[in-house]
Image (tube, rainbow, N blue to C red):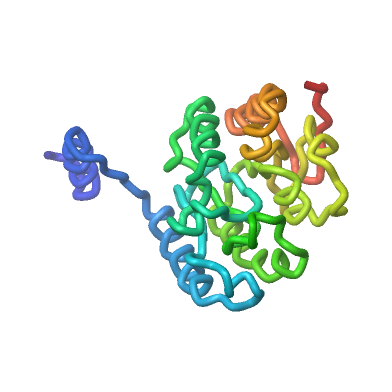
Length: 231
């Protein structure tokens, strides 16, 4: 090895990765991971709403702290509550396949929810519950600073964008919305796709918009909402 100490270390880890998986994090990613860990420790003791009474685990979020793409869902279900990780049930398996079809791995992106604790019977989180938990999510998004946000389902879009609760996903699709200066694409929740397979083509069209934003094929500027052709 003849490079700098850091280059030598990376070369060694890459060689090691041939037999064992190794994730090499840049200094910025390490800093972000530390900040996220601090928030996660605070969230682990959170008692801001009544969801604390029924939870097994706080489901904080998972993925690359320097992700370019971030998905936000509604809240954890039974599988997620048991394992302490978002989107690990059937809907999560479908999300994993969607992420793979986009050319990414689960560990490349970041995944979180509007609320960190499971609402009883997987109901939608109440306004009070969402308001109590949103500061954690907003801080996650601020730290990760993804290039593109994807809201999975009506609940995620409504609370991220402060919309009327009666807003439907179909009214938000085919356009690029804005969250704090970053583009947001709203689409169907994977659970909705499992119940309604006919929505899958539309969801994939939404993911293509996200991919084009990431690649630069679609140029987007803050405070500008793009209306896309219907699909």
